[in-house]
Amino acid sequence: MKCHDALLQLDAARPDGSDWGDSEFDAAREHLENCLGCRQEVLQRRDWDLAFLTTAADSSCDTSIPPEGLTDRILSAIDSHTPLQPDTVKSDRPPSKQTSARHGLLNAAVVMLLIGIGVAWRLSPESPGLLTVEQIRNWPDTQFETVYDDEALAALPEWLESRGGAPLPPSWDPSWLHRPARGWPNRNSVAVMSFRVPVARRGSIAGLLVAVPIEEVEKSPAAGDVSSARPTYSKSGRFSTTAWTDTDSGTVFVCLVAPGQYKRLRRALVLRPV
Image 1 (cartoon, rainbow, N blue to C red):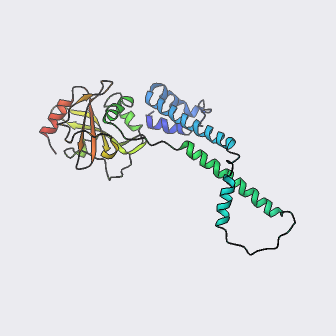
Image 2: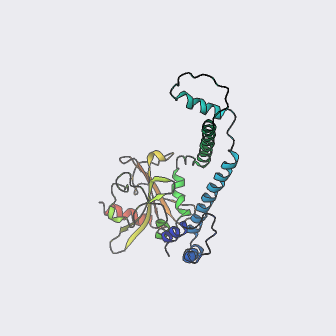
Image 3: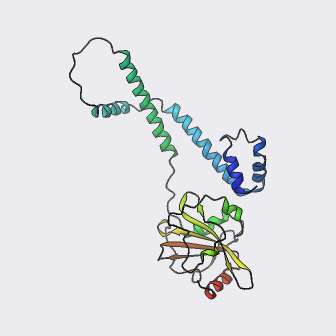
């Protein structure tokens, strides 16, 4: 079973995992035992689901009574937008059942509003902040075993083509892309692409290309291209990485190839410009 299919199947399970023992999830469970990336993704999703359920339960208990004075302020705001009624004769009779029911429903609505605000505030994601070039260089270490790891690429979220297509360096041929672009988790504008550059009589050079809008990078690298950028190994040593800024498109590119392949890639791009 592929990573994408396993994750889709496990999405149908209950958030608390109580039905994981059902036979319909046998294939997905077997896949998780052999795939570290999917196992981490499923654990992250389960933690999120359980956090949501816990927060909702806590909020329904802790916020059953609104803070002091908040109810009066909300009622006052509602009354200020209610059309004025003609003066009526004051009566000593107790409030009618309709009036009591109206206030009861209004108070219940206020409590539900406060619960919703509390849940939304506690679950609202923090801004991820700006990326650094080092983060972009080393992020694939946590996702990919090699540049040929197509299953890890397919497990990433779909990339939203907000700019009409995957951003590529000016000298790159779109036909080199080996798979459709995927997205960086929680950053829909960042594209992650797998490529293969053909080399005459020597097969091809495979790698990963990460394209990041320049406004999302804390300190962008020098302008240039893959041939002029200085290679650096990722922390794991599994990738030789280069980073540069394309000022025309406003994009920071980070290219990752297997160790020892950077010089071959540079020669291929110099000898075969598009």
